Length: 425
Image (tube, rainbow, N blue to C red; front, side, top):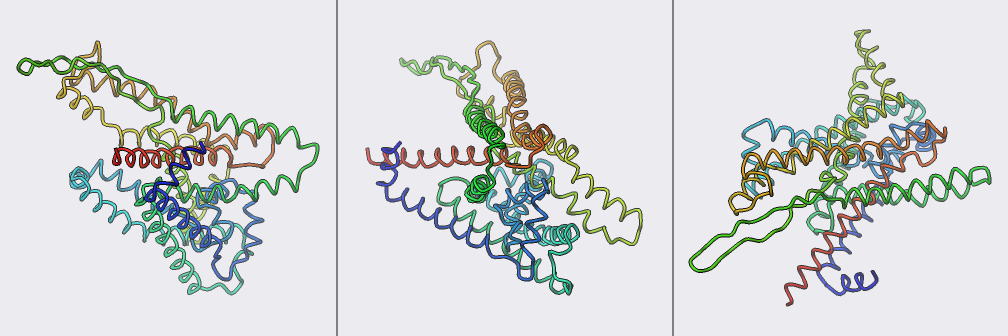
C-alpha cells in the first residue's frame, strides 16, 4: 500500500488533483462552521440529540444542521433537482433526446438542474427554519421578523449553490464524485467528536454495548465491501468470422454485472425525499382551514414516529435501487451491441431473448443489493428498538457512504495512475 501512495505522489497531475480536492474539502468544512446570525446553536443541539430524522439529515448535510450553518441544507436541493430531471428524462421525449446527444446534451440538463436547485433550496430553507423553530421555539430570537426570515433564506440558498459549485470543481479533478465526497467529508469530520463522546461517557457497564457496536461496524464494513465488489459474470462467446483467408473472433469472455450497480445513490436519494413531506407540511401549520392545519401536524408527527419512518426509509432505498439501476443499465443496448459484434450468451438467442435474460438476471441480483442497502439504512433503528440506546444512531448509513465513496475514489485515482503509466510506455 505504501508503494501505491508513493507511486501516486510521484505523478504530478494526480498529486495536484488530490491536493486541490483536499483544499476544497477544507473550505467546505470551514464554511460548515459559519452559523446563521441570531440562532441559539446550543438549544438546537440539545433538541437534535433525540431526533432521529434530524440527525439523519445532519449526517447527510455534513454536520451543518446542528450548527445552523449557512450550508445547513448541504447538497440536498441539488440532489432533489437531479431526481426530478432523471424522472422527467424518462417521461418527456425532448429531454430524453437531449440526454442522448452526448456531452452537450448532458451539460444542458446539468444547467437546468442547477437552475431548479435555486427555488428548491429557497423553499427547503423556509421549511427547515419553520420546522426547527416550531419544534424548539428557543432556537430563534423572540423578535424574529419576516425580514430576518428572508435574509436567512437567501443566505442558506447561496450556501447551497456554493456547495454545488465546490462539488463540480471536485468532480472536474476526477478524484471521485464531488457531491459524494462532500457528504463523505462531513461524515468523517464527525468521527473525532463521536469517539471523544464515547471516551468521556465511558463506564464499565457500557463495555458490552461498545464491543457489540464495534463488531457490528466491522461486519457492516465487510458487508459493504462484499456487496459493492460482488459481481455476477455472464459468459459471452464470440462467433468465428472469415475475412479472406483470416479467421477473426471465436473467443470467450464474460459480462460483469455488479450486485450493487446503484452504489450509495439510493441512500442519498431516500434521505433527500424522506424529509420533503414534513417540510411541506410546515407551510400549512398556520393555515386558516382547521382540517389542513390538523393534517399538517399529522404528517409531521407521523414522520417523527420511528416505526413509520423506518418502514418508509427502507422502502424508498429499496425502490430507488431498482430505479437508479434502470437508469444506468440498459439491457437492450447491451444485447444490440453483442449481436452486432457477433457475441452471444451460451444457450440464449441473440437479440430480444438476450435482452430479457439480462433484465431478468439484473432484477434477481438487484433483490440482494436493494435488500442489503435497505437493511443498512434502518440498522440504527433496529438497534435502538433492541437495545434502547441512541448511541451511534446513524452508524449503518455513515459506514455505507464512507466505504462506498472511498472505494469509488480509490478506483478513479488508480485509473488515472494506470493511464499515466500507459502514456509513458
